[in-house]
Image 1 (cartoon, rainbow, N blue to C red):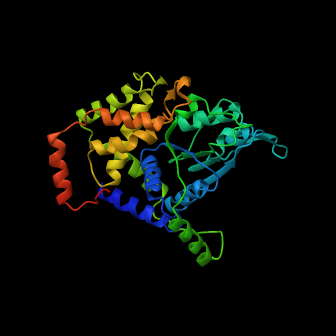
Image 2: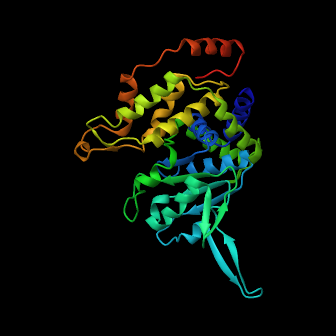
Image 3: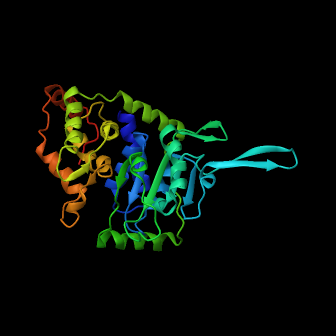
Length: 332
């Protein structure tokens, strides 16, 4: 796991040359990539969501395609279609932008449900079916989608089935005054809006890193801890619909990825706690009658994490001591 940790640190350091002061967000994106999951960004315009996706594609050595979702976008504009070749009198497949490694779907909630649904098979099955023929997508395949929490007029909110297929939902947030000044300084020094980053790994290496995360050890008590957190979302009176078992799996995969990122071959409770919000905030639906209160998905999940006892596993404590003595990368 030390190799994964070292590569991840190089990746984040390289991207940080362009993205200022959002290392925590970059790390969560890296967790999602290690867990082979899709990412939904929900935040205001102009906070570098698109730039982050572009930076990761460059540093990871991945093919990158961007689609601006609009109300007139058709499913074939995503998946592709067969086009008649008059010269050869045959139908040839013209592949859509979904045939890539990293697909950025900008303002995904502006496209109609039929077009949004065109992504479902690709996101879940990593394949596309056209006219009865099935085409496997290249590995890795990661969808990074953005949507704005404002300007709801003329939008089509994502259905729960599609929201559930995003491994995480992330918010970027505004930079501090100091960070924003640094953004201006870097732009002045660069003398152009364009940027170029060094490739750190390639697609083959990414797939190897994803497979290595499957070797991360998860103690039975840690698994029970994950289940207790997810099950609690189904029991609270303020929650209309709790997280599904897919939420438990998301928490499981993200905790493993975070452990690998920090050079550990075992999951600790902190891995689980840190991943609760990005993994579950978009998987619960609050009751309508609490809309006027200050209760949000975030405050509810925070209260759940605070109430559930953290497991103390002697076996993990011994592993942590060995990990610390080995000089592996520390955690914040």
